[in-house]
Amino acid sequence: IGQMQPHKTTLIMRTPHYWTPRWLLLLPFFDRIAYALFSGYKVNKSDRSWLTRVLDEVFMPLVAVGINRPDSTSLLDDIMNGGGLHVCTTSKQYRNAKLWRLEKSQPKEFTENGLLLENGQEVEADVVVFGTGFQPTRAFQEIFEGVELQDTLDDGLYLYKYIYHPKLPNVFFLGFKDPSLNMPSNASIQSLWTMFCAAGIAQLPALSDMEEMISTRQQNTRQSFPFSHRRAYYDFFLAGESSCDYSYTVDLLRDCKGFFGKRVASFWCHPANIWSSGAAFGAIFGAEIITDDESNNAVASDSAALV
Image 1 (cartoon, rainbow, N blue to C red):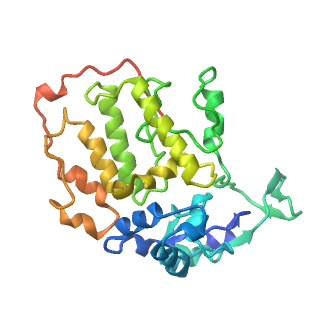
Image 2 (tube, rainbow, N blue to C red):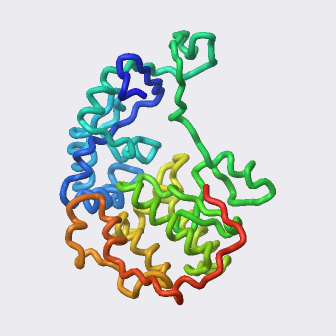
Image 3 (cartoon, rainbow, N blue to C red):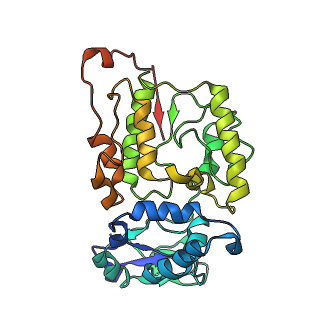
Protein backbone atom coordinates (compact mmCIF):
# COMPACT_ATOMS: atom_id res chain seq x y z
CA ILE A 1 0.00 0.00 0.00
CA GLY A 2 2.80 2.38 0.94
CA GLN A 3 4.54 1.76 -2.37
CA MET A 4 1.42 2.41 -4.45
CA GLN A 5 0.48 5.64 -2.68
CA PRO A 6 3.58 6.89 -0.84
CA HIS A 7 2.28 10.47 -0.51
CA LYS A 8 -0.69 9.18 1.48
CA THR A 9 1.26 6.79 3.72
CA THR A 10 2.29 7.32 7.35
CA LEU A 11 4.90 5.08 8.98
CA ILE A 12 4.57 4.86 12.76
CA MET A 13 7.99 3.71 13.93
CA ARG A 14 8.77 4.38 17.57
CA THR A 15 12.09 2.50 17.57
CA PRO A 16 14.72 3.51 14.97
CA HIS A 17 16.31 0.71 12.93
CA TYR A 18 18.57 0.27 9.93
CA TRP A 19 17.23 -1.09 6.65
CA THR A 20 19.25 -3.10 4.12
CA PRO A 21 19.51 -2.16 0.43
CA ARG A 22 18.56 -5.06 -1.81
CA TRP A 23 21.70 -4.77 -3.95
CA LEU A 24 23.87 -5.61 -0.94
CA LEU A 25 22.41 -9.12 -0.76
CA LEU A 26 23.30 -9.75 -4.40
CA LEU A 27 27.03 -9.13 -3.97
CA PRO A 28 29.33 -12.14 -4.55
CA PHE A 29 29.93 -14.14 -1.35
CA PHE A 30 27.60 -11.86 0.61
CA ASP A 31 25.89 -14.64 2.57
CA ARG A 32 29.27 -16.09 3.65
CA ILE A 33 30.58 -12.66 4.66
CA ALA A 34 27.40 -11.81 6.53
CA TYR A 35 27.37 -15.05 8.50
CA ALA A 36 31.06 -14.66 9.32
CA LEU A 37 30.20 -11.20 10.61
CA PHE A 38 27.35 -12.47 12.76
CA SER A 39 29.36 -15.39 14.13
CA GLY A 40 31.95 -12.86 15.35
CA TYR A 41 29.33 -10.99 17.35
CA LYS A 42 30.01 -10.46 21.06
CA VAL A 43 27.86 -8.51 23.50
CA ASN A 44 30.81 -6.28 24.47
CA LYS A 45 32.34 -4.44 21.53
CA SER A 46 35.83 -4.79 23.02
CA ASP A 47 35.55 -8.59 22.70
CA ARG A 48 34.88 -8.47 18.95
CA SER A 49 37.69 -8.88 16.42
CA TRP A 50 38.97 -5.79 14.62
CA LEU A 51 37.62 -7.12 11.30
CA THR A 52 34.15 -7.60 12.78
CA ARG A 53 34.21 -4.09 14.21
CA VAL A 54 35.33 -2.49 10.94
CA LEU A 55 32.64 -4.27 8.94
CA ASP A 56 29.99 -3.65 11.58
CA GLU A 57 30.70 -0.07 12.63
CA VAL A 58 32.13 1.41 9.44
CA PHE A 59 31.12 -0.41 6.28
CA MET A 60 27.63 -1.70 7.14
CA PRO A 61 26.20 1.57 8.56
CA LEU A 62 27.70 3.37 5.56
CA VAL A 63 25.63 1.36 3.07
CA ALA A 64 22.57 0.78 5.29
CA VAL A 65 19.49 2.90 4.71
CA GLY A 66 16.38 3.84 6.67
CA ILE A 67 14.17 6.86 7.23
CA ASN A 68 14.48 6.45 11.01
CA ARG A 69 18.03 5.30 11.64
CA PRO A 70 19.39 4.59 15.16
CA ASP A 71 22.14 6.66 16.75
CA SER A 72 24.27 3.54 17.26
CA THR A 73 26.94 2.93 14.64
CA SER A 74 26.76 -0.84 15.20
CA LEU A 75 24.48 -2.63 12.77
CA LEU A 76 24.93 -5.88 14.71
CA ASP A 77 23.73 -4.31 17.96
CA ASP A 78 20.67 -3.01 16.14
CA ILE A 79 19.86 -6.39 14.58
CA MET A 80 20.45 -8.40 17.76
CA ASN A 81 18.04 -6.13 19.61
CA GLY A 82 15.23 -6.52 17.10
CA GLY A 83 16.54 -4.51 14.14
CA GLY A 84 15.65 -4.83 10.52
CA LEU A 85 18.17 -6.76 8.45
CA HIS A 86 15.06 -8.52 7.12
CA VAL A 87 13.83 -5.19 5.68
CA CYS A 88 15.48 -5.31 2.26
CA THR A 89 14.53 -2.49 -0.04
CA THR A 90 15.20 -1.68 -3.69
CA SER A 91 16.22 1.81 -4.77
CA LYS A 92 12.70 2.53 -6.05
CA GLN A 93 11.08 1.25 -2.85
CA TYR A 94 13.42 3.40 -0.76
CA ARG A 95 12.68 6.51 -2.83
CA ASN A 96 8.98 5.93 -2.21
CA ALA A 97 9.57 5.25 1.50
CA LYS A 98 11.28 8.62 1.90
CA LEU A 99 8.00 10.22 0.82
CA TRP A 100 6.15 8.67 3.75
CA ARG A 101 5.17 10.76 6.74
CA LEU A 102 7.17 9.51 9.72
CA GLU A 103 5.74 9.42 13.25
CA LYS A 104 8.06 8.32 16.07
CA SER A 105 5.31 7.96 18.67
CA GLN A 106 3.09 4.89 19.06
CA PRO A 107 -0.63 4.23 18.62
CA LYS A 108 -2.92 4.91 21.57
CA GLU A 109 -6.43 4.30 20.24
CA PHE A 110 -8.58 4.30 17.15
CA THR A 111 -10.61 7.39 16.35
CA GLU A 112 -13.45 8.11 13.96
CA ASN A 113 -10.96 9.31 11.34
CA GLY A 114 -8.02 7.03 11.98
CA LEU A 115 -5.50 6.65 14.78
CA LEU A 116 -4.58 8.74 17.84
CA LEU A 117 -0.92 8.61 18.88
CA GLU A 118 0.51 8.95 22.37
CA ASN A 119 2.08 12.30 21.43
CA GLY A 120 -1.42 13.69 20.77
CA GLN A 121 -1.17 13.66 16.98
CA GLU A 122 -4.04 12.14 15.01
CA VAL A 123 -3.27 10.23 11.83
CA GLU A 124 -6.11 10.08 9.31
CA ALA A 125 -6.25 6.57 7.89
CA ASP A 126 -8.52 4.35 5.84
CA VAL A 127 -6.29 1.28 6.34
CA VAL A 128 -4.11 0.44 9.37
CA VAL A 129 -1.44 -2.27 8.97
CA PHE A 130 0.14 -3.66 12.15
CA GLY A 131 3.78 -4.45 11.41
CA THR A 132 5.92 -3.51 14.42
CA GLY A 133 6.28 -4.49 18.05
CA PHE A 134 4.64 -7.90 17.65
CA GLN A 135 6.02 -10.63 19.92
CA PRO A 136 4.31 -13.85 18.79
CA THR A 137 5.92 -16.27 21.22
CA ARG A 138 4.24 -14.59 24.19
CA ALA A 139 0.96 -16.07 22.96
CA PHE A 140 2.23 -19.63 22.59
CA GLN A 141 1.74 -20.44 26.26
CA GLU A 142 -1.93 -19.48 25.88
CA ILE A 143 -2.33 -21.35 22.60
CA PHE A 144 -0.75 -24.52 24.01
CA GLU A 145 -2.34 -24.25 27.44
CA GLY A 146 -1.15 -26.82 29.95
CA VAL A 147 2.14 -27.52 28.11
CA GLU A 148 5.27 -26.19 29.79
CA LEU A 149 7.37 -25.33 26.75
CA GLN A 150 10.32 -23.70 28.57
CA ASP A 151 11.10 -21.52 31.60
CA THR A 152 10.28 -18.26 29.78
CA LEU A 153 9.17 -17.31 26.29
CA ASP A 154 10.43 -13.73 26.53
CA ASP A 155 13.40 -14.43 24.24
CA GLY A 156 11.56 -16.70 21.81
CA LEU A 157 10.72 -20.38 21.52
CA TYR A 158 13.73 -22.67 21.12
CA LEU A 159 13.02 -25.37 18.53
CA TYR A 160 14.75 -28.42 17.09
CA LYS A 161 16.20 -27.22 13.77
CA TYR A 162 14.07 -24.08 14.23
CA ILE A 163 10.96 -26.05 13.28
CA TYR A 164 9.89 -28.63 15.87
CA HIS A 165 9.32 -28.76 19.63
CA PRO A 166 9.42 -32.21 21.28
CA LYS A 167 6.50 -31.35 23.59
CA LEU A 168 4.24 -30.47 20.65
CA PRO A 169 3.84 -33.60 18.48
CA ASN A 170 2.71 -32.94 14.90
CA VAL A 171 3.12 -29.17 15.28
CA PHE A 172 5.71 -27.54 13.03
CA PHE A 173 6.86 -23.89 13.01
CA LEU A 174 7.94 -22.41 9.66
CA GLY A 175 9.95 -19.22 9.28
CA PHE A 176 11.41 -19.25 12.80
CA LYS A 177 15.03 -19.02 11.67
CA ASP A 178 15.68 -15.31 11.58
CA PRO A 179 17.20 -13.20 10.24
CA SER A 180 17.60 -15.21 7.09
CA LEU A 181 19.32 -13.88 4.03
CA ASN A 182 16.98 -15.91 1.89
CA MET A 183 13.80 -16.57 3.86
CA PRO A 184 11.61 -17.62 0.87
CA SER A 185 13.81 -20.59 0.00
CA ASN A 186 14.47 -21.42 3.66
CA ALA A 187 10.75 -21.55 4.41
CA SER A 188 10.16 -23.64 1.29
CA ILE A 189 12.68 -26.26 2.38
CA GLN A 190 11.39 -26.13 5.95
CA SER A 191 7.92 -26.94 4.62
CA LEU A 192 9.39 -29.79 2.57
CA TRP A 193 11.14 -31.18 5.67
CA THR A 194 7.89 -30.81 7.62
CA MET A 195 5.94 -32.73 5.01
CA PHE A 196 8.47 -35.57 5.07
CA CYS A 197 8.44 -35.72 8.88
CA ALA A 198 4.64 -35.78 8.98
CA ALA A 199 4.66 -38.53 6.36
CA GLY A 200 7.22 -40.59 8.28
CA ILE A 201 9.90 -40.30 5.58
CA ALA A 202 12.27 -38.13 7.62
CA GLN A 203 12.83 -39.54 11.09
CA LEU A 204 13.03 -37.26 14.13
CA PRO A 205 15.46 -38.09 16.97
CA ALA A 206 14.14 -39.41 20.27
CA LEU A 207 12.24 -36.81 22.30
CA SER A 208 14.83 -36.91 25.10
CA ASP A 209 17.63 -36.27 22.59
CA MET A 210 15.81 -33.28 21.09
CA GLU A 211 15.13 -31.85 24.54
CA GLU A 212 18.81 -32.14 25.43
CA MET A 213 19.87 -30.44 22.17
CA ILE A 214 17.42 -27.60 22.74
CA SER A 215 18.45 -27.16 26.38
CA THR A 216 22.16 -27.00 25.51
CA ARG A 217 21.52 -24.52 22.71
CA GLN A 218 19.31 -22.37 24.90
CA GLN A 219 21.95 -22.13 27.62
CA ASN A 220 24.71 -21.29 25.13
CA THR A 221 22.57 -18.67 23.38
CA ARG A 222 21.57 -16.89 26.58
CA GLN A 223 25.22 -16.68 27.60
CA SER A 224 26.41 -15.41 24.20
CA PHE A 225 23.71 -13.05 22.93
CA PRO A 226 22.08 -9.99 24.53
CA PHE A 227 18.41 -10.20 25.42
CA SER A 228 16.00 -9.87 22.51
CA HIS A 229 12.50 -11.20 21.97
CA ARG A 230 13.90 -12.96 18.86
CA ARG A 231 17.10 -14.31 20.42
CA ALA A 232 16.00 -17.94 19.98
CA TYR A 233 15.85 -17.46 16.20
CA TYR A 234 19.15 -15.59 15.81
CA ASP A 235 21.50 -18.07 17.42
CA PHE A 236 22.19 -20.05 14.26
CA PHE A 237 25.19 -17.76 13.88
CA LEU A 238 26.82 -19.63 16.76
CA ALA A 239 27.11 -22.68 14.49
CA GLY A 240 30.46 -21.40 13.21
CA GLU A 241 31.55 -22.41 9.73
CA SER A 242 28.21 -24.05 8.95
CA SER A 243 26.20 -20.95 9.91
CA CYS A 244 24.80 -20.04 6.51
CA ASP A 245 21.49 -20.58 4.76
CA TYR A 246 23.04 -23.09 2.38
CA SER A 247 24.42 -25.33 5.14
CA TYR A 248 21.13 -25.16 7.02
CA THR A 249 18.98 -26.17 4.06
CA VAL A 250 21.38 -28.93 2.98
CA ASP A 251 21.12 -30.35 6.50
CA LEU A 252 17.32 -30.42 6.22
CA LEU A 253 17.48 -32.12 2.83
CA ARG A 254 19.83 -34.79 4.14
CA ASP A 255 17.12 -35.73 6.64
CA CYS A 256 14.86 -36.42 3.66
CA LYS A 257 17.16 -39.14 2.36
CA GLY A 258 14.24 -41.48 1.84
CA PHE A 259 13.12 -39.23 -1.00
CA PHE A 260 16.32 -37.63 -2.19
CA GLY A 261 19.27 -39.54 -3.51
CA LYS A 262 22.42 -40.15 -1.50
CA ARG A 263 24.19 -37.15 -2.98
CA VAL A 264 22.88 -33.75 -2.02
CA ALA A 265 24.36 -30.79 -3.83
CA SER A 266 27.52 -29.44 -2.21
CA PHE A 267 28.96 -25.94 -2.36
CA TRP A 268 31.79 -26.97 -4.65
CA CYS A 269 29.61 -29.03 -6.97
CA HIS A 270 27.50 -25.95 -7.61
CA PRO A 271 29.79 -22.92 -7.72
CA ALA A 272 26.88 -20.71 -8.80
CA ASN A 273 25.91 -20.75 -5.14
CA ILE A 274 28.67 -18.27 -4.31
CA TRP A 275 27.19 -15.46 -6.35
CA SER A 276 24.25 -14.49 -4.19
CA SER A 277 22.39 -15.19 -0.99
CA GLY A 278 20.10 -17.48 -2.99
CA ALA A 279 22.41 -20.40 -2.23
CA ALA A 280 19.64 -22.43 -0.67
CA PHE A 281 17.93 -23.00 -4.01
CA GLY A 282 21.01 -24.82 -5.22
CA ALA A 283 20.48 -27.43 -2.55
CA ILE A 284 17.17 -28.35 -4.19
CA PHE A 285 18.30 -28.05 -7.79
CA GLY A 286 21.33 -30.28 -7.24
CA ALA A 287 19.58 -33.06 -5.32
CA GLU A 288 18.99 -36.37 -7.02
CA ILE A 289 15.24 -36.86 -6.71
CA ILE A 290 13.88 -40.41 -6.45
CA THR A 291 10.38 -40.87 -7.80
CA ASP A 292 9.95 -44.63 -7.57
CA ASP A 293 7.09 -46.05 -5.50
CA GLU A 294 9.42 -47.45 -2.83
CA SER A 295 10.39 -43.96 -1.71
CA ASN A 296 6.81 -42.79 -1.45
CA ASN A 297 5.18 -45.62 0.47
CA ALA A 298 5.32 -43.99 3.91
CA VAL A 299 2.00 -43.45 5.61
CA ALA A 300 1.27 -39.87 6.59
CA SER A 301 0.39 -39.07 10.19
CA ASP A 302 -3.24 -38.51 11.07
CA SER A 303 -2.82 -34.79 11.56
CA ALA A 304 -0.15 -32.12 11.55
CA ALA A 305 -0.27 -28.41 12.14
CA LEU A 306 1.85 -25.67 10.60
CA VAL A 307 2.47 -22.39 12.44
